[in-house]
Length: 442
Image (cartoon, rainbow, N blue to C red):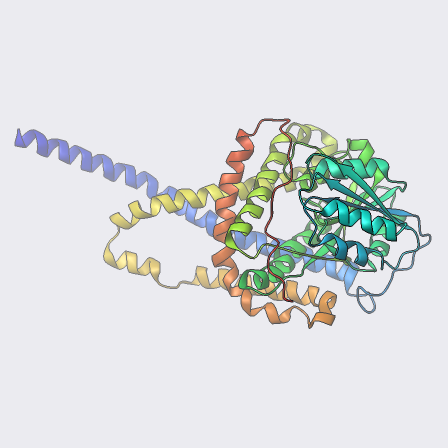
C-alpha cells in the first residue's frame, strides 16, 4: 500500500512539474503584454497629442477667452437634460445666459425629477425669454431627454450640456466654427475641466482629464476617429443626428453610442480644446467606482452592438479604434488572470527569486518615468486653458497616486462592466441614476 501511495505521489508531482513547465512560458508572455501594452499606448497617445498641439493649438494667440473669427453666426439651441438638479440648475442657466454669442435658445428638459428642479426651471423661464422648459412626468433617461429637446429645437446646431455644468462664455463660438468650416462635421466635443478639487481624488482627476481624457482625444483626432464625445459638453449637427436616428434609449452611455453611430455613418467628430466646460466629478471611491463602471459597461455595449457594422468597407476607419478598445478589455482580464496565478508562482519560487521579484528593476522604472513624462506633456499642453486658476502644473505632484488608485479601479470596472454588458438584454431602457457630485469649496 505504501509503495502504491508513493508511486501515486510521484506521478502527481511529475504531472504538476509538467503543468508548471507549460504555464511558466505563458506567464512570461502575459507579464510582458501586461507591461508593454500600456507603455506602448502611452507613447502612441503622447505622439498623437503632440501632433494635434502643433497643428491646431500652439499658433493660437492668447487663450480660450479670445473668440474665433466666424464667417457667420447661425442660431444655436442649448439642450439641458435634467434629473434632480435643484442644487445646480440655477447656476448652470445663469452662466449660459452670459454666452458671447448673439443668437441662442435654451431648452431644459425636466426628466421626472423628484426634487424641485421643475419649479426652479419654471421660475427661470418666467425671467428669461431665451429659456424653454419641457417636463416629462416620468424618468425616461438622458437619451430620451436629449432626443425630446433636439426634436423641439429651432436650430441646426445643438449644444448639449449636463444640468450641473458651467459652460465658458466663449465655448459656443469655438464649436460653431467647425460646423461652418466643414459640412461633414457631425459633432464637436468640448474640453471638460474639473470644478471640485478639494480632495485627493479631485486633484488626481484634474491630471487625469489632461493626461488621459484630453491627451487621448487629441491623439484620436490626429489619427482620424474619436472614441466618444464628452457627455457633459458636445455640439451636434441636427441633420447628422436625424441621419443616424438620434440617441439610443437602451445604451447606458449615450455619448459613446452616438459617437459610434455618427462615425459609422460617415460623419466626422472634432475636438475643440477651447470649448471649456466646468464639471463636477465624484470624490469618493464609491462614486468613482459607479461612474467608471457605467463607462466600462457602455464601452463594451458599443463594441457588441456595432461589431457587424465594422465589416462594411466604409467603416474601415473605425477598425483600429475598435481593436484598441478590445485589446484594453483583454488586458484587464489578463491582469486578473495574472493576479490569480501569482500565489501559485510564488509557491514554486525560491526565497531568492521571490525577493528579486519584489525589488525595483528597469522595467518598473521605465514605466514610472513614462507615466511622469505623459503627465508632464499633457499638463504643459493644457496649462493655457487654466491660466486664470493658476494653471494645472501644481497638480503634477498628485499624479504619483494615479496608477495606484485608478489603474486598480479601471481594471475592476472593466471586467465587471464587460460582464454586465454581455448579460444585458437589448432594448432595456437606460434611465438616470444617482451620481456622486463631489465636494465643493465654499
